[in-house]
Each structure stands twice: as C-alpha cells, then as structure tokens.
Image (cartoon, rainbow, N blue to C red; front, side):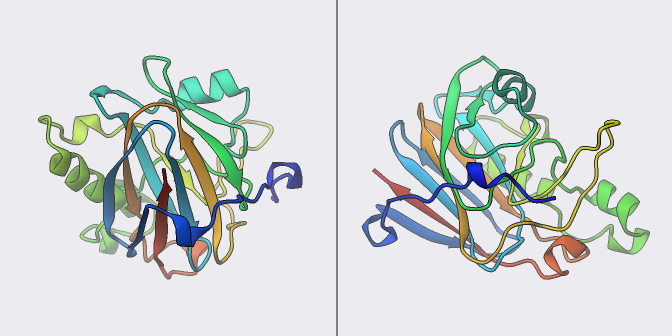
Length: 217
C-alpha cells in the first residue's frame, strides 16, 4: 500500500551544513538530545530498514511520546509530513517537517525476544531485539530508568497498514535508499533509536542496514 504523494516533502537543509552527523549501524542504539528548534533527520541509508524510535521530555523522563495522543489529536493512524508528536502529558514534542518516505508506523511496537519467538520460531529466541537495545539506551541515560520506561514507539520507514475491519499487518516496505524523515523539536527532547537488528524480517530482505542521523541548529 503506497503512501499519499501529497505527504511527500523534501527538505531544503544541506547535510554538509549539519551540526551533527552520525551513522547508526544495524542492531545498534543511539541516544542523543535534540534541543528546541533543532531539526533531526533520520535517513534510511539502504532502504526498508526499521528505525524504532522513542522520544522523551529531556527534563522530565516520565513525560514521553504517546502514540494514542498523537493519533487522537492528529486524526490519523499514520505519521508523515505535518504530524505533531505529542507526549503523555499533552506536550508537543516534535513536528514532522519533511518526509520522502510518506508513511511511518506508530502501532506495531518494537520487536522483542518473545514476539520474535511467536512470529518466527523458538530458534530465534536468543537473538538480539529492539527491546534489548531500548533497555540499553534508557539505562545509559540514567534516572533509574529500565524496561518499564519503554512504551509505545514509532517505527520510522515501516509499513504497517490497518485493514477496514481493524486487522494489523506488516507489509512490504515502501521506503528506499536515502529516503528520510525530518522532525523539528518543539521542546527539548531525548531521542532513543534502536536500529532494528531483525535478521528474520522479510520487510528488509533479511538484511538489517544502517541509518544516518543528522541535526541542524
């Protein structure tokens, strides 16, 4: 299912002028603050990679991205250009200001060892999952955070269509090499990305690949 072309919007920002530029390898996590007014770009370097992402209020970690508030206030299940991401305390965290993919999932959640076992086979249980990366990330940040602080996440570049009868499916990706999503921070936030390590997902052709993150002041 393709995304609406009306949601596709390129950014005028030049990567060579970014204040920060980093490549997150497949399976790694990335934790970094994004200050109010800064612009964060996440690039799907080779295409159809899942960038599982969490956002927190930088100064109050209990205030974090809320999928339900974002969907309710945006009147849309899918995220793309123009979507504002809201927190559990109804603060505007970030707004998507450019998007060359056109659809991003906020319902499917992050893969875990348990879900991978259910979805694929018992043999994959020992394999690294996004929830493992998220746990590493929140513990790296501190504040006594642990797995209870991992809530609903965004799956940038993932295509998870909802059927008319409410079914949820993980469809083939609609992203491609060097497509990106760009977000302007509406307040100081902490961004935590788990660049999905999943080797069993046909959506990425069983080949997890890097994502690139850039920040402009």
